[in-house]
Length: 121
Image (tube, rainbow, N blue to C red; front, side, top):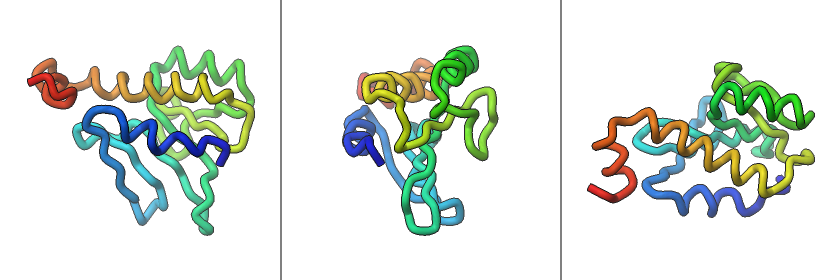
């Protein structure tokens, strides 16, 4: 995978947890118990997709601009998008997408819960 910085970047965000969903062989990153990013692994534990939640319009626009961004693998195709981990998506764009995925899930919580997640409460 050409994004070796990704794990450290995601775990540096407030209240992010990481686990392995063994039955899917996905490494999942969550906030408040809700997944916002997953690294989908093959049988040899090699990443084949980085899947994240994005605003539907943003995801559609990115898929039109980059061949290596596709509708979410094994997820709702409107809200989830997958990036090929050895493709041509620039690091800075992937960082922005990861940030947007975090914000997309965070905003689904109540204001009180958001403050708790962010350590403000």
